[in-house]
Image 1 (cartoon, rainbow, N blue to C red):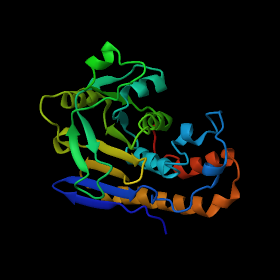
Image 2: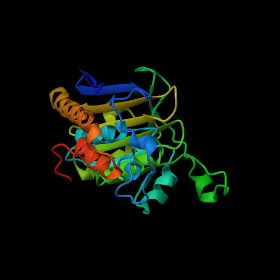
Image 3: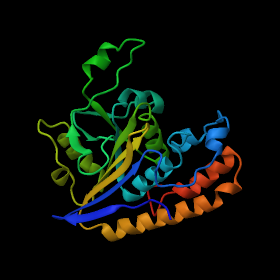
Length: 277
């Protein structure tokens, strides 16, 4: 029996789904030993970190978290905020199709329970380099995060891996029912007053926060929020991933190379009923 146990709550016309798991005690109980024993390939198609955000520290859970986030926002127009890591995301993706914002959603990965870990929207803080010294542009935009389009699951994975450099990684994912709603989202994330999810999200929109602990004393979590009652649909998604985790753990002794691992991770993570793929 795996540990993929969400707490679903519907109140005041809004559905919340919350999952939390201590670092090292994530939603998968059996991990592939090759993550610790083998040298990682240079080929990005066979490198589990580059393809799925999976390595010997964050393990196969990351593939599950990202697959779930993609499933919860199925069929929508997705935009992601890699907190702290705006400039790394720009370099990693090799493009500049992003918008500055002055609010991002923060989860305190060191807090072991809800709601103390949920800090809501805060003023962004972007990681500055030490060598070489920060540029004038970086200093001028220190408190502006980047809102990036996440056009496919590989892009969401790339944005997520840029945040896995310190104690924890944190990504905000907005799924908008209509692409025209982006301007309204930007207005809220650039406003003078602190946004509230209850008023920021319009019917059909979904917000997901993905927090991944990278060190002892931290906790992974997923927070999913949307207007309307989504408990039945989201439970079905969770049940499907529970089945996949069980199948993955059952087959884990049958593959012995990174190519075999990536094939297994593809089956574990592949999108659920998503017509945007």
